[in-house]
Amino acid sequence: MTAQAGFGSFGEYLNAVKDASIPGGRRDGRLQIVNTPSTGANESSGGDGGFAVPGKWTEEILRPLKAPTSILSRLRVVSDAAQVYLPIDVERPWSTKGPRPYWLSEGTQATQSKPAIQGRTLRADKLVVLLPVTDELWADSVGLAAYVSSAAGERIGYTLVNQVLWGTANGAPGAGVVASGGTLTVTRHSGGTFALLDAMGMLSALDAACRPNAVWLMNPDVESLARAFGWPYYAFAGQSGFSYPTLLGMPVLLTEACAALGSVGDILLFDPSQYLVTSRFQETWSLHFQFDYDQATYRAVIRWAGMPAYSATFARPNSTNPSAAYTVLST
Image 1 (cartoon, one colour):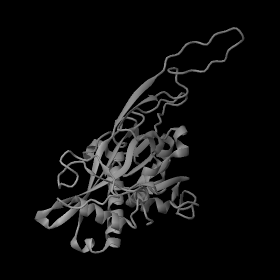
Image 2 (cartoon, rainbow, N blue to C red; image 1 turned 90 degrees about the vertical axis):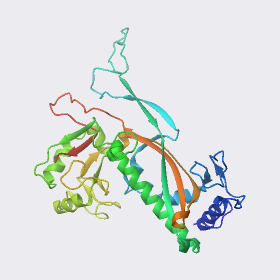
Image 3 (cartoon, helix red, strand yellow; image 1 turned 120 degrees about the horizontal axis):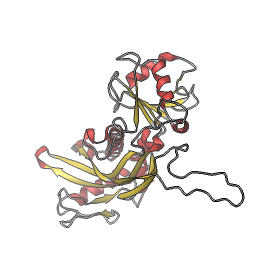
Image 4 (spheres, rainbow, N blue to C red; image 1 turned 45 degrees about the horizontal axis):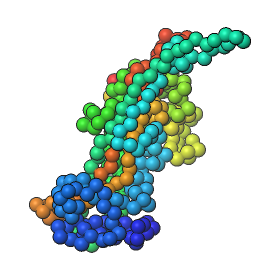
């Protein structure tokens, strides 16, 4: 990693945080204090005080979240504010509610229409990651930097994907996709498995406007069954022309956050751009000592909130079958 904010390496930065966090310790002038608690950032308290991570290393830590194989990179980030209100047009283009276009002859007036808007309020909550550090890691700045970077990014990523899928079911703020009122549950053809007919049914249930951005998000056990569909239904990474596989022409993303095979939430087909996020990925780091374990713990803090844009499925104008921006399979 290149030098940032005067530090030669991420390990050097982390050791400076350690020195500054020890009661009575020396604070390196290159450290930028963020949200210093009233008791002082050098005290081993549980406050929000910490030191901003220089930009390049923030990008390194968050690289797994922004990879094309992560669902998090495809969500619609609408703001980085702590709280944001969004008006959502919940009606489809064919609806008789909300804005309506009219063909007009010369001298005629358009009929007035009223907006059909629902509000979505996102309040970013604090996500804290605690990373214990051993004496061996203190002695190896390269190893310390590698450990903190990978452990923080992977755990933040898994936790946020859990929030996207399950929301408050896992103690996270906001609504998850699986149980959302806007998610359409498609009947599974045979319990405990995943068949090509299931994939076809989910695709049929997905709103046509959502298909260009849609992705499959699935448990790896489900993907092992999808591979058996063979070409042209399933294409391996590389064979598909991308760094990820595709199913019915749409990206396949894997996560252990999905439910077990045969359960609701083991596979989703949905449009991630219809999941709204406000996030503040400006990590701050502070060091807190756990003397009982003769161990120090880095404490990273970020802020995040997300929810599905739609809370109901869609009625279609020329079909009795509803559609949705998010689909799952039944048990």
